[in-house]
Structures are given as C-alpha cells and as structure tokens.
Length: 133
Image (cartoon, rainbow, N blue to C red; front, side, top):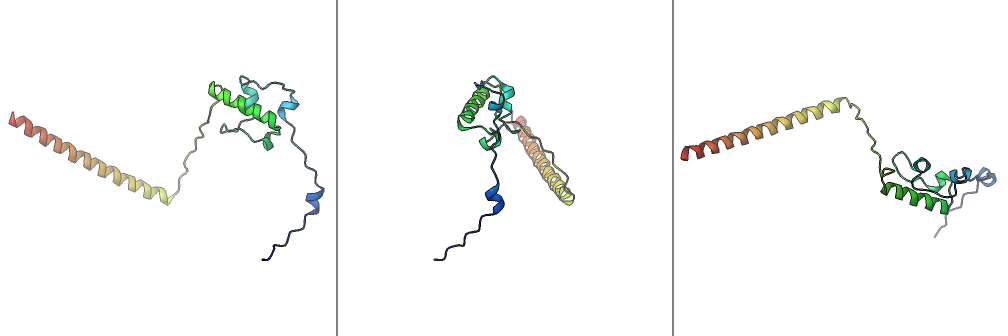
C-alpha cells in the first residue's frame, strides 16, 4: 500500500490568526432572547426564513440554542413565517419557446376535439332517451 504524500502546510495559513465574529447578542448586551422580539429574531433568519448557522452569526452554542427556540416559538405563534415565497420570472429562451408554444397549441386543440366528441355523444344519448319516452 502506498501512502499519499502529505502537502506541506502553507506559511500564510500557519501565521494567520482566526478572528471570531462577535455575536449580535453580546454586542447589544441582550440577556434574554424573547420570541416576541421579531426585529431581533429576523437578524438570525435568512431571506428564505432559514435559521442562520453559528459560524455566520457568531453566536456561541447556548446563544444559538436560545435563538433557535425563540424563532421556533415565534413561528408557532405566527409572528415569523416558516417560509417566504420567492417569485422567479421565466426568461424567454428563443427557439425553444416557439417549439413549446406549438406543442401546447396542439395539445389544446386535441383536448378541444375530445370535448366536442364527448358533448356530441352526450347529445346523441340524450336525444335517444327523449324519443323513447
């Protein structure tokens, strides 16, 4: 078995100090995270209403647990949404749009023909019944 040679550590990485991001809670000296404080909780939620990770927000484990619990309670009480709808508009795709348009027109025409056939059959059947009585 051959072992892979280890890459040498880079000098830049070894000398670089990792600076921890300060927490919003400790900067603002928040002692208690309340589920009714929607303005504070929205800072810890992404644009699609997902709870942001600790490495993004800079919280420690205890703070992150408190925030997650408060966000979940606020969602349950309908103060925060579970999800936000993101509307995306379709862009035109040139040739492809033309082909799709023709395909859908043909499908619609087929459905109209089927409906006309069914309505004709219903009229014939109802005409037969009225003649028998």
